[in-house]
Image 1 (tube, rainbow, N blue to C red):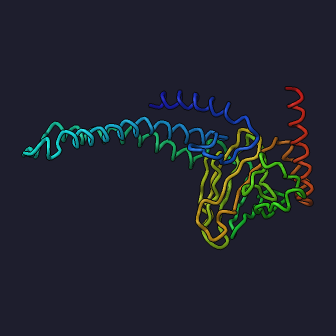
Image 2: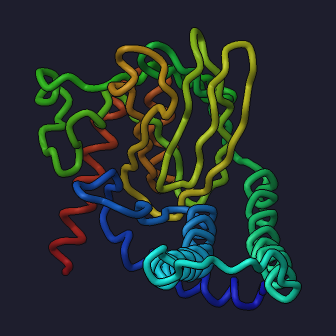
Image 3: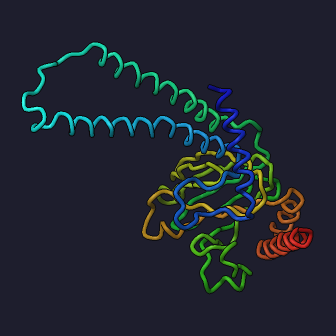
Length: 290
């Protein structure tokens, strides 16, 4: 089973790698499956979903066929005298043993995935505390030169001022005034709590979702493998503006992150503008090279 899972994970990872070519990941219109994975954990989650479908679809089809057959074959018109059979040993053995076997094939990789989610492969190199408020997020970098700021949904009237008028990269209702900035290929630990009511820190492309509970601190990890800007949302019904509480994480190179952090400690708006200008400049260079 582990060999099959590894093979499928590699295939899925390759597919995801080609799919995540955009520098932006957010919910899309008419989307019916997961967003492209930006972390190894999300690839494992996507693999597990595809794996369980191999059990769900045949079982669903089998039950529908049996129901249809029973309705057709044993209706009152075709079968006016019902059978008096009350016991069949072979059928009882099959419908007892087969579900147990199916559950075992699902449970084992499920436990492995659950274990992986709580045991990251690498030690975290960066710790960020995320506090949910009604209805925005406070971020606090747990580093020597501490940095903290608030991140709230961006009003349409403020787009031009922050240079975020391109709605393909900065979608409506998901764009924030200050993104959480982290370096690529770095294990990041997020300490999550709530200041008032229960919120939930969810970032689908990273495969993380953890509740923000007042008075408690939960933790989660992610290691983004691709640069870009990624969007999530609070996933707990937390009040009238719950739907307007986006989460935006910008993943950049280590050098870009170091420069941004050094400047952000004293001038966050200036650091964000400088980072956006450098990211856009690099995009232009790549486009010109293409």
